[in-house]
Length: 139
Length: 139
Length: 139
Length: 139
Image 1: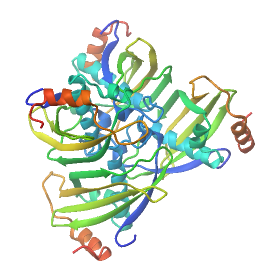
Image 2: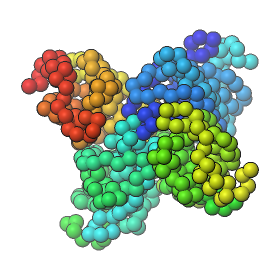
Image 3: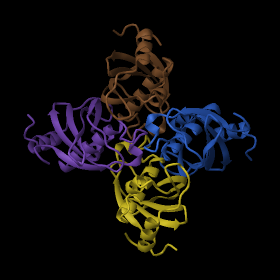
Image 4: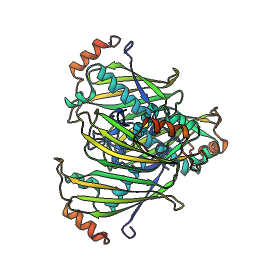
């Protein structure tokens, strides 16, 4: 974790590529998923635990800009940060970087916290405190 | 349905291809899924209804032989048949064919019927009767 | 095609769902791909032909808003329109609708036209003319 | 590497799961892909290098037996071994194991070596020697 940005590495699989020889555009949303899961794990609050406690984060928005491509067997780094934390929503931003430090994809996802009955709920206080303490740039 | 073989068509998506320019080998198991779902729908017993009634078919075996390749935008036909029906298991066989009638992939999946508590259960009689009536070659 | 919006249907596969029981958020980008491929086919210019002629449309931006969920075996409709056509870029907008007419996901993708050498190229005039003729609301 | 079995770990992503809450059956073929890629990397001959040298390994057979399930965020181990090495074909066997040492899936893939012109070719001698030296149980 550096300035609030968590780093995780992903090896590009054959399955991730398409016939253009590069990662299929939709698969970066899976890479984003890995990024935020590993960020939450490092914060001490794995998403699987959050769900087990009855809180799900459903995606309400996702966006990506594609700057450059990578192909099979590349090792990419996903940088993930919480960039907004409101009563019932949380936003993650992502940068996917190649081994030679090129910016491949940037983007964000916005999530709403819901209960098992699908009703909106507040982000649990325990998680809010963890995020606010460990990511000081968030206000 | 011809001699017990149900036909359904699938258009190959960019997403389905890999950097070799052809359908990724694992994606044929998704094509198999489409084949058996459409077969069950034609038999008047969609798999979604079967699950709604508390019976799931979990995969216990899957196998495929790869004879030829196809690429993006190809229209393939999945031929699916029930080839074995026992008390608690059902087997589907598949042939995936190209537009110019080449055999691309052949394979099968074997499924066990389970209840919501994950315990094995008999294939529901209603489904057995439908299959036995409509697919006479099964004994 | 209605007011420039092309309609195509997609049946939700088991493979498309995730453990929340609904379509995984990244898979809507595959649905978008199907939408624009079928739009181009109806315009008489399948994307596979465009690539065969040496013109690729690489994605430079993608965005989606998630309004509601659907689960396994749902039949969704993807509405797709060309909403912007410039010298070297083209934008598609999408609405994914459920069988009971709920808006599930809306979004867009922006594409740049490139040549086999990866250099930007103009959208081929033949395609521009087709789009401008068939989609009068584009200026 | 232990007795010729190479071990690699994979964290189950949300994307890997289906509405039953477990890894979708076809996704294990992607896990197999990761297993054989990492085995070849450890042998000093990454598959990406093999392809760069003009040798591809196309899948001619794949099979899997499903023994038990795992869900989101599980850490599975893929054990991979070369179990057959002929003039122009190579077979990999796989065992996917849960963190609590349950056998989840076992299977194999059989590959043929082909040249860029799609013609069958011998497995490169350099690779044969590496495999035969490091995996003594192969004859």
